[in-house]
Image: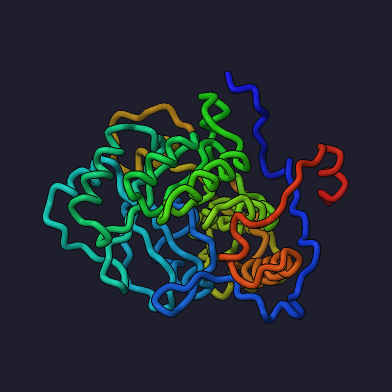
Length: 352
């Protein structure tokens, strides 16, 4: 048994640089560049109560990368620098790599795909990933996972996987760790994967997946070494998320209608459906006749903000954080800041 205590986001706080030569937040660029355009270090979780074709334009407009739920293919190419991943099952992935590769779903002519499975530790998956990269090379951009062991991240780097989803059981609609006792505290997992990434010239991008509850969790994940943060619950609570929307918890409304925005701005209570993708509800929707035990939950939560307002705050807070850390861009920020462990009492002091 490894007796070293592993840490989560609440166990840590970011320490500012001793000095910062940044005079204004206007000097800070909190984006990655792609095709001479830019996007934020955020990706939607592939959940059908977060993103679909009714609202993907809202995420793209806000420079948020999109990972669609299974069964939804990117319908248009957003030409503003955001990445778009199609999510597929392990079985679908096996079929694709056996065929002649002709699929492209991005402006750069490549196929961006997420192998959307819970257990990224399977050798069968690893062998398929090797086959895909050997056959199609850089023409296929793969997001794989999920993993909860730093050594599995090393395997993904050796294979040449482009993006690795790091985290199991942390998500707001996931009960894997609670029921199955499998997992790894998020902060330690990200940091240990980042340390491994330093051994490679072109390491797999680290995606912190699950358990994000606040802006500060995102900034901590980035400081620990995550290149991107994948978000489900936080985005679901935005008015524009594609979860079923109810007025007074009973009356269905169209969240994309101007009436919904008026109701929200005038203080009416709107609620959103939020569910894990391993729930029996989803299994039935996918047409499965033999249902497996669910490792997810179905919940209804109040709408708390519009996506525009959340992103505006996110950018402002991120720039503020980066100014303290003396980082003018993400390359100077990700994985390069000092953090210290704090006590539970210290956390409660500022957890207002």
